[in-house]
Length: 140
Image 1 (cartoon, rainbow, N blue to C red):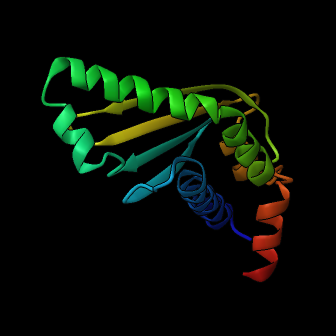
Image 2: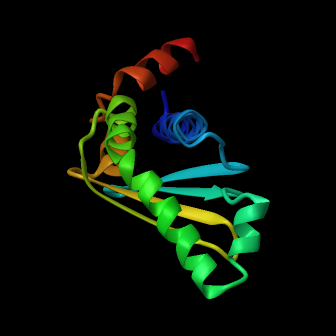
């Protein structure tokens, strides 16, 4: 399988898994999810994550802080599940996790920093993969 095609499969698998996690863990999913693998990082952009009520709360500074705090706490409470999703799909351990939310656009960015350069492994053919991608590759 070509490196760019495999990279695309992995990125799509991560997006799908995070959408499922959002629905199962947070009760609702985002409108769209885009995942990019860049060097030793997996960058995930989730759009449309705020409800109408949360947008209304964000009209005041106190409300905006409340929404950011609550949403951040919810995601942080599930961070071990998120790291497990990345490990299962990529076979790579997450070194650190960063996230932020824009209450103006309703977009969340997640960055998973890995212990190794996944993009290089994919390009060089060194990628051994997690079990979910290996299974997906057999079906393709």
